[in-house]
Image 1 (cartoon, rainbow, N blue to C red):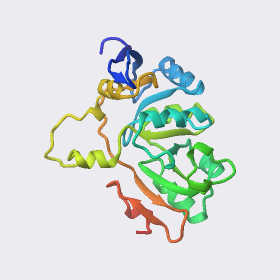
Image 2: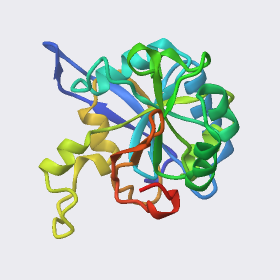
Image 3: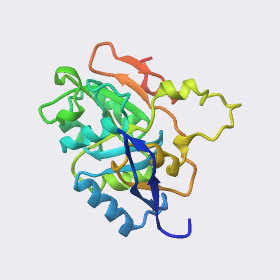
Length: 245
């Protein structure tokens, strides 16, 4: 890409109407993000916009978790996602996590070893948990602290958590043999342009494109809201250091 900015064109039928809307694609060097371009991303998030961003588990949608419209937009981007199934949060650090959910001493120690990284912890909600991220009856919330440089660059500049969802789900990855190492097919979920084309028109404000391929993986999910803790999903990441499985 020769220019810092380009556009994805959505040109397909949606609800009987022809979509022809533009998503701004912003090229950012992940190891040394341009401050001016990152400022634009931050302004969009602050205004309640949606960003397509790379993470250690692949491209994902992120938005302000304190803005109710973020949840509504996510449901349009992920129509197969149950309305009663909460989306997770990206947090800045463990200090922020402790304000949004309850951490026992043991969970805190484990979290200190796991984060930042591709681990989602299900924790008991606190009174400060964003309601759009809370589970049924506001009892639990899923939280991650990302170790991807783009997400970290965003998080260090904001004081609120981000709502996050992957661009597809594990079922689709399995159905298309994505985890089969012999499968060399180019999948749409690793291509920013294809993601934009297939997304609900008019929802993604900025798509961040980096100079490296972003393979889609899944996070490991551990439920610490019950005793004993339960491994909900093994994403293939290291588990021994957690010390409870």
